[in-house]
Picture (cartoon, rainbow, N blue to C red):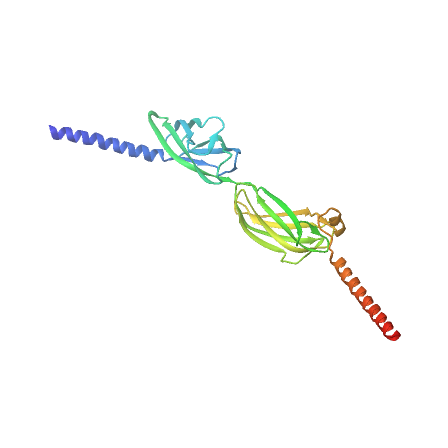
Length: 296
């Protein structure tokens, strides 16, 4: 008697296990496929999800829910959508609208979902399946530039004198800039150093500066530059800029008190005058001495 009960219990457990296995295999015959999209920080976008019924029966009461609780995404509208029925070997699609947080870190993300459905031929057969699909959060390129012209020994550049031109590349975006290279084309100045410089990687919310040794030749020089780099998605980008530079003539610099007038020539003149006066004094002294000797 006891052996018979044990056998019945074992039979029930085995049946449940087999049914669960069959249900699991059956549920896996429903495929969920989503568009692979690229989205940016703070942006909202639609995602189309296709549900394909590869079962050997129709399914109904199909529900798909996005599980975004621990992710920097929100849904605009409901996070759960329903499809009344999908016939055997047919597919249907639904669309979710998602929005990224403004402080999201760019990269690849997997969005989890849960799908449930019922066998249209037997409402007691319900199935649940979980999975995920990928999307990419990219970073828009935001670059600013700052230029400065300085003299070799002064804070301002002066025509005809040596100086230095500096170009600051400012990465205002949320993604890194890679393989940054700067090449300049002189306009109104003579380049003393190399015309190009490699900066490498400029991290998000950071900057890097490159300087060039020059001689200023014009009152209105311009910094014309070409900047090439790879963006967050590793795509090659090229930007060109043209920035005016503020340069002064020596006369303007003196008038504005930017530089002090050199007194070298004055000192040289004083020395020359002193030498001339000394020579004259010596000659007069010799003449007077000779005259006194002749009288004696």
